[in-house]
Image (cartoon, rainbow over the protein chains, first blue to last red):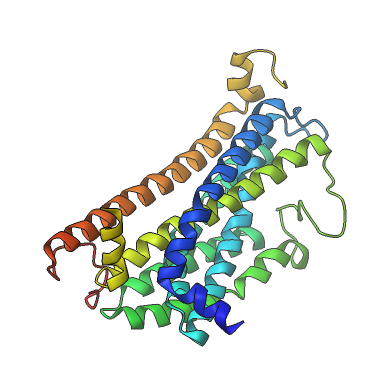
Length: 248
Length: 69
């Protein structure tokens, strides 16, 4: 366990191993998203049971983005914990690059939800528990980003951002159970571990593909940007210079 | 195929503006993420190269914090 943490914690090792993993993540993500897009937009039959018509096709971007928004926050909080407890620098670098992507995904979930709300609910916004807790998530992401950059010394910004991420993670179960705890306009979970989805297979299979594609996209982007962050912070280290010499 | 023609596909049964707005913004932002990551990567790679060539310590690279080396 200790050697594992130290290995992953070494920027040099992470930089080398992520170079090998990253192209595969991009490839898998591209294939999954392309498949899910074509299937969901053009081949899945039009929704008839609830009379939503073709507006239900928004689900294929809305649900994956909403999943990711929450998963990115949890990953960021986990990375912050690893950084605070074991002082693993790579974890802090990963947390740094995750925050903007999390904010983007939260915005996408909110925006696509608002656009979807107009034809289905007759309104683009409601101060409903699910919607409000997602808006709070967006502010938490923006808060983490702002807090990190508000310090002159990196160390202070990293610690403050980590603490906010770890405290902010309380919002995640609130988002998850908001549809069960309060009476809300938003429908309950699409996927659960315990039961089969209520929608027909030709509707949820492309959705599952999109969700997996978005996850791979997140992993690939995080690896890529963490590598840049490593260069940014370790530019004067010996191993980075050796890297250039090897390349020449 | 759920649609009979390309026109019907674009119209999305009258929900075209909603579907394409949601998908468009999602696609745009995800592409922007990739473009930004590539730009950042290229900038840092050239900063590292410049530094290795000159051997100096303080060329203007993308420092985020005052204590960045």
